Amino acid sequence: MAEAKRLGCKNVLVTHPLSPVIGATQEEIRQMAGLGAIINHCVAPCYPNPLRDSLNPRVIADSIRDIGAKYCVLSSDSGNIHGPSPLEGLRAFCEMMKTAGISRKEIEIMIKENPAEILGLT
Image 1 (spheres, rainbow, N blue to C red):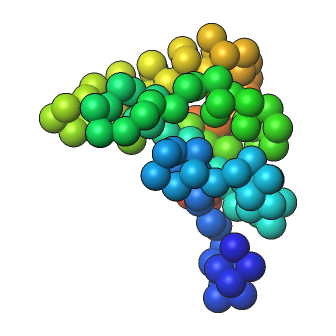
Image 2 (cartoon, helix red, strand yellow):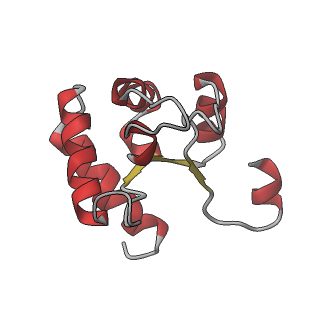
């Protein structure tokens, strides 16, 4: 993260930090967010997969609560032939987050406000 900033990167988006493939610890996620990174949580690791363990959506919700929605983005990471459409994936992910205790306002921050800011639309 520090190197990205040194090289002049304005925005750093860390994708799939909690997925079994990346496996960042919550402390590492906290450090990245503290340095200004946006943490991108995707629904794909929550879906059943015969090649790997699924990620419990509550783990993502706990991470969001720990660092705050203002440091997170939710995305679908869907659209391939084996999964739902991107829109349906994001809708399902939002429902998973609501079930895990993330508020509607927090979800709106993560799917509307933060992406708009990253893209320079605000």
